[in-house]
Length: 330
Image (cartoon, rainbow, N blue to C red; front, side, top):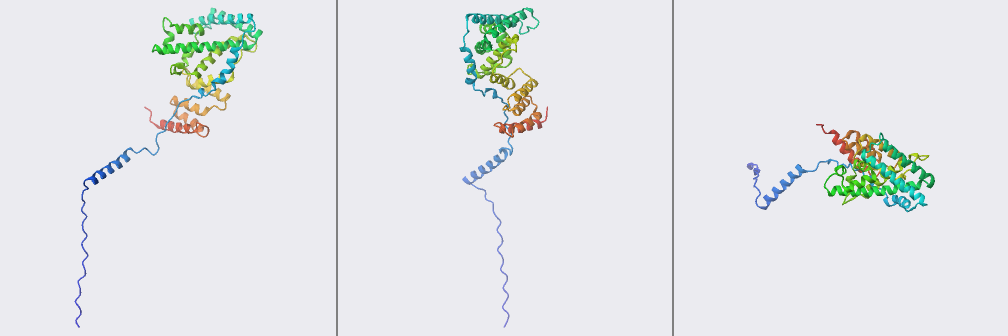
C-alpha cells in the first residue's frame, strides 16, 4: 500500500498592514481639543513649589483695648481744681507753656541756645513744681491729658485740611502765610506738629478721619511732652501709664516713618525686654526684610516659624527671603 501523499503545510495568512485613517468630523475636533489641553497643562502648570507670599506688615500697635486705655484719662478729666487758687495756677501754667511753645515754633524746635526760651521754660517748670507740691501729681497729669486731647483734635483738623488742599501735610505745615488750622496747631503745640509729621501720621488718615489708635498715639506723645514740665519736681515728673507708653513704643518700632533701621532695632530690643509677649523675632525679620537685608532676616523668621500665631506667615517670609537672597544682584 502506497504511502498517502504528504499534505503541504497550511500557510499562515499574511498579517495585514494597519491603515491609519485620519479622524473625521466630531472625533477630529475632540482629539484636537484633547491635544491642546494636554499641551496647555504642561506649559502653564503651576510649579511644584509656588513662590512664597510674603507679608511685611507690622500692626501689633493697633491691637489695643482703646476704651479701657482711655478710662483712666477720662477719670482724670472729671477731676476739678480743689480751689480757685489751684484753678488760677493751672491757667497760668497753660499760658506760660503757650508762651514757651510760641518761641519754640519760631526757632523750629531749636531752643537750647536761646535765652528767651530758657527763661520761659524755667518759669513754667517752677509753676508746675508748685502745683504738684500743693495738689499732687494728678493735677499735673490732668493738664497733660487735656493738652493731649487738644493736640489730637488740632492735628486731625490740620491733616484733613491738608488732604482737602491736595497737598502733603509737611508742605501744609510750611505754607506761607500759614493756614488757619496750622496756626491753631502751632499756637497750641509749638513744634510738636512738625515732630508728629515726621512720624508719618499722615498715613494714618482713613475714610476722612485720623485712625482712632493713631489718635491715641498723638495724645500720648503730647502728654509725654507736657509731663516733661515736671523736670523740677523732686523725684522727677509723673510717668505715663504703662499701656499708653507701650502703644507708643510699638508704633515707633512698626510704623514710625522717620526712624532708621538701627534706631528701630534698638527700640525693638527695649520693647521685647519689657513685653515678653511681643513677637520680637518676627518683627526683627520684617524690619530687616523691609531694608532688603534678606539673608539677615532669614534666621529670625525661621525662629518665629516654630511657634505662635505668626508661625505660618514667618515660614512664608523665610522662604521668600531665601528666594530673594538667591537672586543675582544687579
